[in-house]
Length: 149
Image 1 (spheres, rainbow, N blue to C red):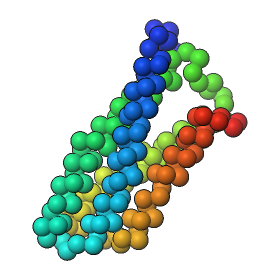
Image 2 (image 1 turned 90 degrees about the vertical axis):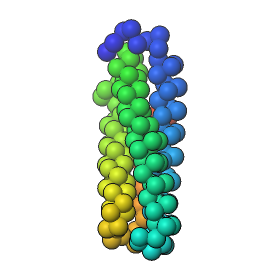
Image 3 (image 1 turned 135 degrees about the horizontal axis):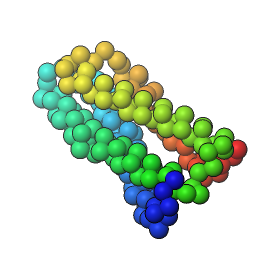
Image 4 (image 1 turned 180 degrees about the vertical axis):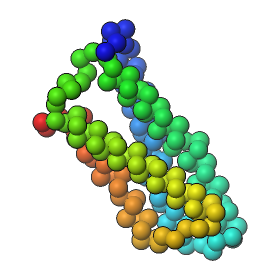
């Protein structure tokens, strides 16, 4: 715990929330782009446009937002009095957060496959995948706000 973080707590929380909103926006939109990308012919001008959109979204928004979410979240948990480490909600939240990081990794992998015209998944696959960050976000928000256990 770092005592000098206490006066900065509200700032850390504000920047963490801003970062999470940006990260989640990217994780919601990227699989939707994959759905649309599945609908166009590999090598077409439309496919090239989707590749640019996917790369820019991932590299310029989603990944930097994930990193800043992690950094500001770390600052929050290092602030004395913020976390009771033995609380059950904390462990569930961390498990869901781990799932979010894994999902981000899958999105990066899928974008790389599309960039190389090697996607093997269907529209339906990405439509289902698009629901994963929503479910994880629901768990995380309930754990942090309600702290049910």
